[in-house]
Image 1 (cartoon, rainbow, N blue to C red):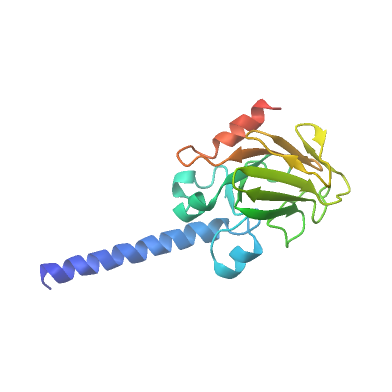
Image 2 (cartoon, one colour):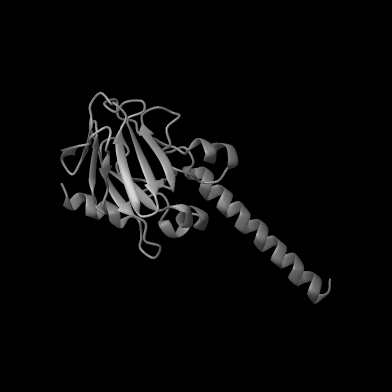
Length: 184
């Protein structure tokens, strides 16, 4: 085998290893906290793709998911504490139903509890006539007008407490957990 052939074989093996690593990382997190319907059908991380604190660091999260995320909802209180739910441009439905983009395992959360609309720099949360209501920074969300979310906003859905964190490309998303604990 000549040097050129050896280099081509080595490059091909590295490409296959990179593809397998991304595949493994994506499917390891795929259904832990919910993945949107588009992601389930295409295999691309979508709304609700979840990074769990302590399993794999952000540096290991596929770069595609990091680039797609415009914000995160971090569960700081309730089942699934430590989960980072990825938000993308468009509509992100939150609830305990399996069809939701972000599925929470809290029995006090309605099947389709709230809708978070992301449009550019605007993040508006709407209550979807939930049984237990939706709070942002302690204030009830008006169903018609919704509530604008600012970085660090505390969202309460049933017994679940989440912290809204805008994505910063060079900052570890796990810092949102620390910010959420400051609001306790």
